[in-house]
Amino acid sequence: MNRHGIVAYIICFIIIFTLTGCAKYPTTPVQSSRQLIITLTVRGQIEPEDTVDPSFSRHYFIAIDNDNDPNTGPLAAFYPPYGGTGWVTSEDAQDSIGLTSFIQYDTDNPLGYIYGVLSGSYFLNRTSPLPIISAQLLDGGSSVRFVIDFSQLATDDIPADDITQLNINFITTNALPTGSNQYVEGREIDGLGPSGQEYITIPTTTDQIFQDDDEDSPNLVPSDPDLDIIHWQVEVQTVSSG
Image (cartoon, rainbow, N blue to C red; front, side, top):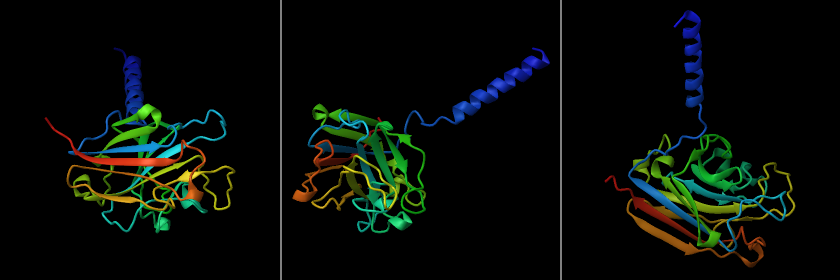
């Protein structure tokens, strides 16, 4: 091989290596000994794309806080300033306390991706999206089930093995306003609890299944059945290495 051939070979190798190293999504999530199986059920269908009104799309979120503090947790952002994200807030959103990761399922995240929330303010500093283990529509499309690994919930402060409980909320919306004065006509949002301002706290040290129905206050029931949360389930499962 002459000198020019060697140079060309080196350039090709560098390009291939660079493209491989910059892949946006890893192909396989890192595995630990525990998984979380999360199921969200709505009154209608899980439909990220609105076929009737293309100007609206639906967003389905699973908001998770791993800080082992039952007093901090994610809340649906019903009112301005919309938590900075348009969908989630907390009692201490200005310091990004109350949310450490979330699953997002919509037209921009069609397979369901998980994001880590970094220190900062209003949950705006986050990791790149990572693929979850699986996302599956169930019950004729009225439910969606996500499987994630505990390693995907870990942070620098709390590694996977140190997670003993999780605060979780299920949040759906058809718009993501971010400006404090931004008005979106027809915006709807739903979260857990009659007022949509609750979250659940589950222990994660043993294999268990937690589930319940969700009922809204009469004046807070979403008119869009595809956004109306009616049931949730969270399962903590040990992964067999054999």
